[in-house]
Length: 158
Image (cartoon, rainbow, N blue to C red; front, side, top):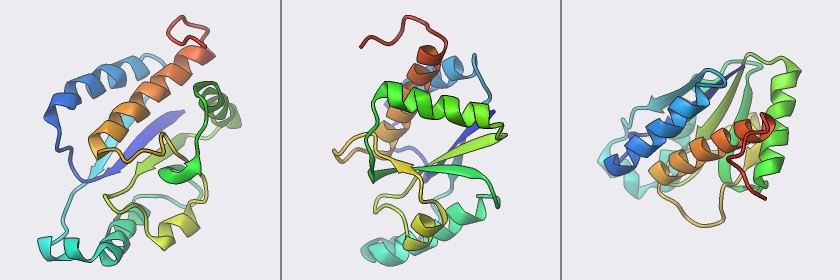
């Protein structure tokens, strides 16, 4: 199974990119992993209209999701799983035989209603407000952690 991290907009925090790459390399030891960045093509004027911005970003997200594709939103409204619960969810997806599982990180204002309707599955990495790059870092680290849990490797400690 391949995992794709679909993210809105480029990273603004280059100092964290190297650490994210460390986790990407570790994840790829277990399975194919990609990050797809949706370019930030929104006019600056729209940034003052969060609802319209969410709709435009939502359209870009939905364009990149194929019919029947397994998708998980990383969203503050989602359930906050433990690392072991995330590992169990990952294992369930791996055993289901799906080819690709896409995790989506939305824009600064979250997801449009159309995205929530299309993708009801969501988890939260934290109830705290985080930068997008920090969410990328946490997502890749937690995915790596889940893979080490499933492989009984000593990275995770309860």
